Amino acid sequence: MQLDDLVSSESIEQEAWTALEKSILYYKGRPVGTVAAYDATVEALNYDQCFVRDFVSSALIFLMKGRTDIVRNFLEETLKLQPKERQLDAYKPGRGLMPASFKVVCDGEEEYLEADFGEHAIARVTPVDSCLWWVILLRAYVVATKDFSLAYQPQFQHGLRLIMELCLATRFDMYPTILVPDGACMIDRRMGIYGHPLEIQALFFAALRAARELLICQGNEDIVTAIDNRLPLLRTHIRQYYWMDLHRLNKIYRFKSEEYGKAAANPFNIYADSLPYYELDKWLPRKGGFLVGNVGPSQLDTRFFSLGNLVAVVSDLTSEEQSQAIMNLIDERWEDLVGDMPMKICFPALENEEYRIVTGCDPKNRPWSYHNGGSWPVLLWLLSAAAVKTNRIELGHKAVEIAEARLHLDEWPEYYDGKKGRLMGKQARKYQTWTIAGFLLAKELLQNPTFLPLVTFAPFTVEPASRACEFELVQVDTVYLS
Image 1 (cartoon, one colour):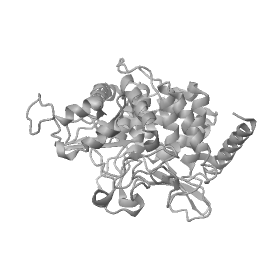
Image 2 (tube, rainbow, N blue to C red; image 1 turned 90 degrees about the vertical axis):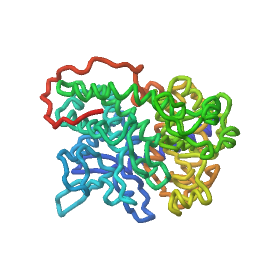
Image 3 (cartoon, rainbow, N blue to C red; image 1 turned 180 degrees about the vertical axis):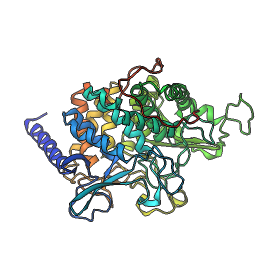
Image 4 (cartoon, helix red, strand yellow; image 1 turned 45 degrees about the horizontal axis):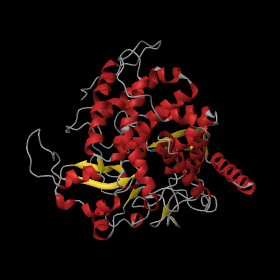
């Protein structure tokens, strides 16, 4: 690397930090989060709010730099926004939910936080991922600061318990996965992921592992037992039924349909004509594989969804062999999945009649744009984390170099369009905070892999249920847990 390149890299990093500082949201004089985007040239809409999922990348880089106050404030304030009582009104957020976002409202000299649980969102979809990201971030805060006392406070144990009750409650479902609607996660517009989308299952697994470490106080034994029961089932289910490589493709290709009983080799009744076998046969490398996007009755969504696959690698939802296969796939299909801007949120895009039917002709989700095959720089940090986790660090460095050459010149846009990610997103906001934070976080993880334990876990084991805390737990109603 030349000296000029080094200076340029440092300058870009400083520019990113300056932009991140400008995005910090203050409430009663305290930093409590970051706004979604700080672009003064366009109408704010809801980009002046702090989104839970968006803030995670900012929070992690703040933790790595010792800026723990903003993360603690965020955790405390969002916990206060969590509904604690059962709702009889179906139009009100349910107990245990975390908001999609919040904003600071000024009424004269008084300030208060106003939460959005999806009531004001496009299509009015309630977020499923917010509470999962919140649990993961709480655990990252504890790992970074060793401040176990925060997580052991009664209100935090109560909040964690409510989230777990919400996730683990018995439903009209017999799978260890979570049933969710379209648009309830990062892919927040209709993209045909209704059912058991990979992104939510991977986040669910990571959140269960995080909660398992934090819920150690007496009174949580039933929740811990439910987590211990669910974790191995969920892991086995995803590894078996969501996995796709050439060996698995050959098995599915020869599936019989209309099978009954426990011995069925095709338990989801997948029909051969519904899958693009010959496209997958051409695209899958011999030593590569990935977790498909969704599995359900007569459905196998074979699109590659980046967030779900990368979270699965980082959280050990995939086996070591599967994790390496995912990284092999990314390496072998670099031009498809990364191209000129890391990285595609999903591949391939829905096109033609399929696009019109599945998305409802969503103009923002036209093929190779936004959630329909667009490129999202925020995924850079998860790609880097997965690269460090699997000792494929060269892939992380390669992706960062691509991003570094363009992001600052394009003023840190939200997403990119086109098959190679060469077009700035048609409706992308500039100075998108999680783009900025994702870039800084990726560089930090590659330079200091010792920070990786903030988002990774020790080897998967089931330990004794709980021990006593010095705090008295808040009593909550019990629910039947599957």
